[in-house]
Length: 179
Image (cartoon, rainbow, N blue to C red; front, side, top):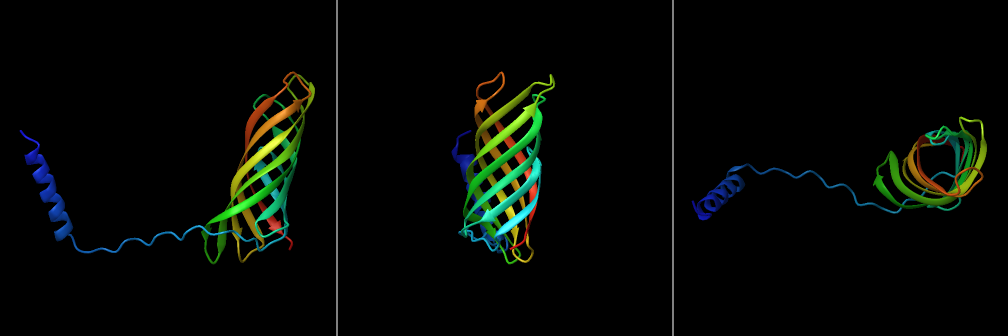
């Protein structure tokens, strides 16, 4: 059997499919991403995960903000304690823009302090940097946002048996905006 026969059959089927099938409309394409512009100023709320904390966010420009978290965290190494972080965030693009909400992507860089005890009741402190990336469901008609975030963490000072440590933290949360 030569390749000409199957190739001819495939071309005949393709031609029949394109000429005999009724015309159909294509689905509309999603709108292109656009630059995000915040319509809120300061919000407070809760985040659950790593860390579980009170979360705040302050937009000082239309696409730049500071966020913070004050709360507790429990690591897989059985370390738990107080976690504090402050991040500078950039919102370069809104992935979805509708009348009811925006879906901005954000990236950031910040600091964190983790004061912990382990399961042997040894104390320790870790100080490091955070690099969060996330999306926020920023509602246009309500003063709230809901966010999902992952943060790469690199501790450069650990007052414990480790000297350097890295991790990925993840959390979901919401904030109510007062302004």
